[in-house]
Amino acid sequence: MKKSILFIINPISGGKDKKHFPSVAERYLDKDKFTPRFVFTARSGHAYELALKAVEEGTDFIIAVGGDGTVNEIASAVQGSRSAMGIIPCGSGNGLALSLNIPLNHRKAIERVNLLRISPIDTGILNGSYFFNMAGIGFDAHISHKFSNMTSRGFLGYVKTAFSEIVKYKSGSYRIEVDGKNYDRTAFMISIANSPQYGNNAFISPTALLNDGILDVCIVKPFPLALFPAVVLRMFTKTSQYSKYLEIIKGRNIRIVSYDHTRIHLDGEPGEAGKEISISVKPSSLSVLY
Image (tube, rainbow, N blue to C red):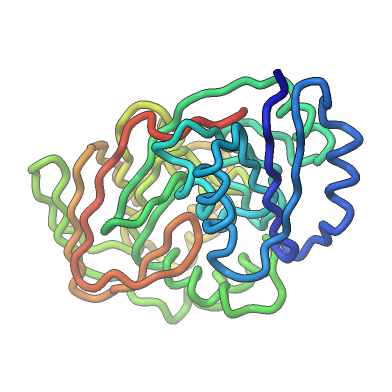
């Protein structure tokens, strides 16, 4: 019996034109296995609404065609259900897709869907909202807010924003509680990693696993500005964990009190959380094609 599959397409993610995606998918999707439908999003939050409706209708596979924000919306609707999610990566970072070894090429990503390989992954929860790849407070959250207002997207735009903002950004003071143990830290940023990387193969916590029921609290300590390129290089060489400027604490229940910064990001999408955030993990709650 054929499986129902819905492709939810964000037409503007990553600044890439996707009007021809349905014809590409029709060409390479195995029609003996799937009955496909295609829908384009029209606004922020629309992908979540479409995915939730598809879950309620019992759709077997719901595919995010977009970037990390689109993936987050769809995964938030699919987690905890009997449906499974797939990804055709089309964003600026593609963090979760890369962590699942999903090809960036559309044809190859669709052919991967045809294999029908499914694996459960964990869901992170921050003050009631979901994340699946990475959440954060501090500099990366600050950049997410800046980046969200830019008309020019893409990796280079992100890098330019980071370099322009770092010279004036001030580290913050935090009280961090991980599984009942307290830590007082001054931090440039704190990333909560469900996967090893932010995206673009920049690894903040190379030992993080998507399905171990644990989150990695990655505390980036203040460092001399001249060492910023070296800190970034460590991410791209999977050696971040050896830096004296990075502390990684693994845990399941996390509480962070910020004395300076209230901006957060969830899978790269900016948000506000107030002075205190509570984070937990929901193990093996999202089925994904990989």
